[in-house]
Length: 83
Figure 1 (cartoon, rainbow, N blue to C red):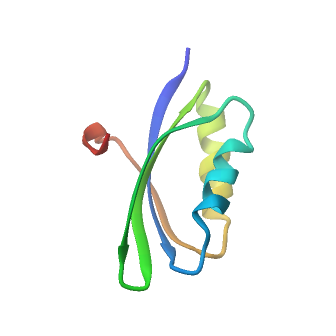
Figure 2: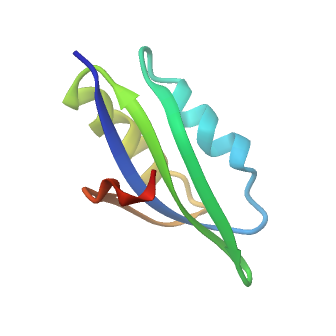
Figure 3: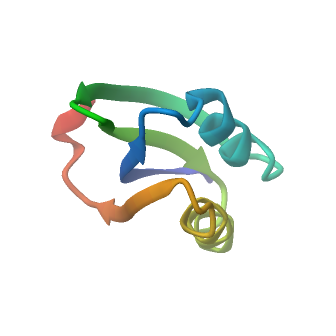
């Protein structure tokens, strides 16, 4: 059974959104369900919702995104009001 996870991400304007989505999709079985990013000056702020079959898949995605030097901030959110 799959579960939908939400991450709030802040990243620099120079970073490609494709790079972030590629990280999520690099984990087998993970699928992006929703993206909502807006430009706030020199940064983009938004929420990415993705479906993963196991909690360990979420943790792997979280660590991969957080390990990217171009990402300013990543945090898990539980509010599904963004979709």
